Image (tube, rainbow, N blue to C red; front, side, top):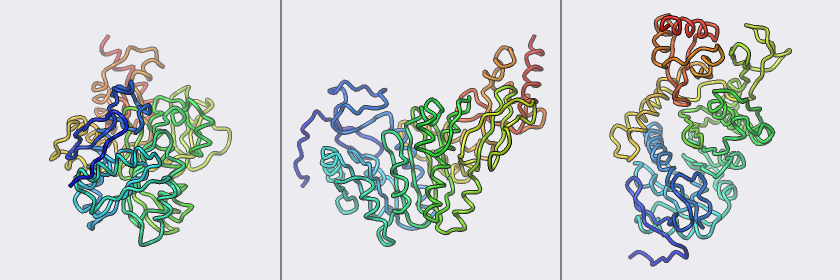
Length: 404
């Protein structure tokens, strides 16, 4: 028999994935689903993030099959518990889930939702601060296979303890919603939090992912851990990164070799990645002064094989956002092995004083010349290609001339 629970605030039952949970009735607090920060409610709940949670379930399913054993999951910022409850119900091989929140209303609501979904044998809810809970589970026999950090704002203050609480080959899932610093609006805040300088460019959302990934790699290395990024994406108001860790100094050193800088010339649009900064940052193409972002991750932020498995997993799913998931995953898979950064067609055309051309016609022109070129999920008008900025400018000019 389910223990009676009465919320002290307006609430309602919602169905998400395969579970039903009690959540705050957001309309009672003047919150609409399009709000990215519905924090006016006594317990945080954002229905917009259902897409994020659907994708997380798919990723953890694939990860569980990858490691081939039962897994333990920790969500130390659980709020009402919907994400962790979905892991327990919708991912095979999850033997235990630890949920935690420092908000007492959230703690009580999560306990109620666990009971209502008959998960008392596998899901534990604790009241406490996230770092404290993670550090209390950092001893070898208490660590988790999956730690999911999904805060409101920056995740950086939780990274040290999250890595400590992970087993070898464990998966760390991290969300960041503070895109203003990461995209270069607040440069000092980004340097202070993430240890890297951002840059206001058309590909700033990719830089945001790489700044977070670079920060994660450096935090992990301090604990003699290396990281491999299995899947990363930018959606709505946030970025999300999934990293598999590997114990050992050698793996940590290998990861740090993928931390560097991206140089950008605002004059000719040339960009390149380097391991360290030196000299006067002069563009090798036009001689102009270059700006930079970093230190950040300059290696791969997606594993094509892993993303393909997540895509296949979604084909069998019945999520409300399945079509959107298909589109995101297919784009990420295609760009997994593409070069760092991307070109936004409209921006290049504007730079040249040319009318905008269709993305597809530009892709066709690049393919015809033998270059690799794919669309990117970061921007609907963005293209990742191994063609140089000079060649792209030349091809765009030819495209416009041919249509004249």
